Length: 202
Image (cartoon, rainbow, N blue to C red; front, top):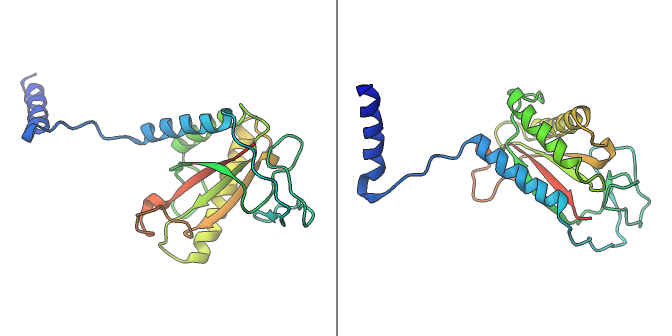
């Protein structure tokens, strides 16, 4: 009992040094909760429809469906395939530090729980396309990083489709490798390893 009181007193003393109080450090769970709320807003709040431009569509990661040149594909889910989107499509990005086993696309159990919640949110608005980007840090071979990021994006999409009630055609996996590091962060920093969900404006 006395040892516990001493420990509490020591923590209180450290917190009061120079009159500064310290808030508890944010945890991964806090980050996930914040991201989930942000994703929920992006999925459910009305957004301005993107301007339709007659531009050549791009097809992500070898998806078979392709739009006709010059056509402006629909940006919302509905009955359309989301695989073909204009390069300047407007979207709201929400990132999550999804964890994988080192050097692989195997999702860890803890991140599986987060992805299950993400799937529930994506199912709320079945007419929205969502681009799922895999990102790595800049350590190692760039080509291998690109391939790994693509595999991880595909693994996330497969997990959400298998575990939830989200149609596969709504999700567009994209590998970004280390080409898009976080702003003001060393490209080799592990925080660059993330999965970004881009909810296309509808």
